[in-house]
Image 1 (cartoon, protein in one colour):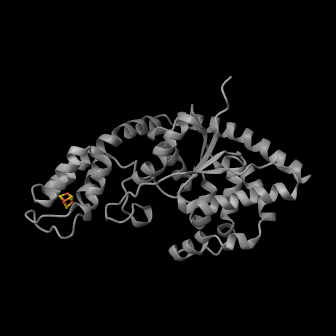
Image 2 (cartoon, rainbow, N blue to C red; image 1 turned 90 degrees about the horizontal axis):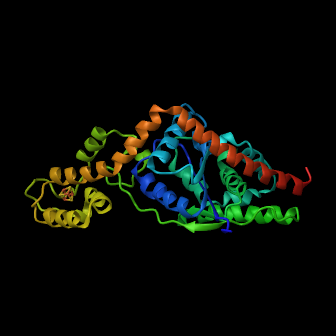
Length: 330
Ligand code: SF4
């Protein structure tokens, strides 16, 4: 008999279209995880409300696009359970129960709470839901009792709060309902955007998985380069150029070396250099675009996958919530 696979849970907020940074940072990692773990991957649409509650007009579209991107990029519903948070009401119920026992001080000391409020000045984030965001996250995680949660170093405090809540619940009701999930530390590569800053939808500098080839090529064509290289005859410094960062991710070593040498000696022009990397990126994205096109043409296939995943997730969530309410004697 083979041992049961350890469980991994991870979610993503549908707050915009997925871009190359999300793909390289999260999806590539999920694809590896699904080979060895019992993976639960969910679209965290209720989480998107914590910052976008005033304008929900795009959320449904972003959920759908996100699911299409996941599947097109290689998330395999035969290997992983793919579902949407709002289809499983148990997330909201456990969030409510946890909120009754979460000290406010735990939430106020969360570094992301203040940072995000500073960062997103145009929205009023002084809300109950935004403060309680980590409690919903704890409910999302603990409902599925995962062994591991993939996190970057900066998200470790959130996972610690989840563990603290699991401990608090188990202690209060003298029943070990919730195990404490461990972190699966993930290194997210820094992917630059077309303006040289970190690729992010808030900077409008993304290359999206749903962008068609001409758009991708155009975005790369207008990408910033080493600012010191004004004329074709000026030698450049590839280390100061975001196009070179893309080469390091997408091009094979001989091309990277050729670009490095050509840039420093003005042997290659920026237009040709960008074309070289655009070809590589297009090559990498073509299978994703093909898979996307098939999914878009057959919307019922996507609906079936999400329905099956949500059914599977619902069974697990329902059983855990039942254990929790039994322990609380309610
Ligand atoms: Fe950047 Fe390439 Fe131009 Fe050098 S040649 S500045 S690496 S685009």
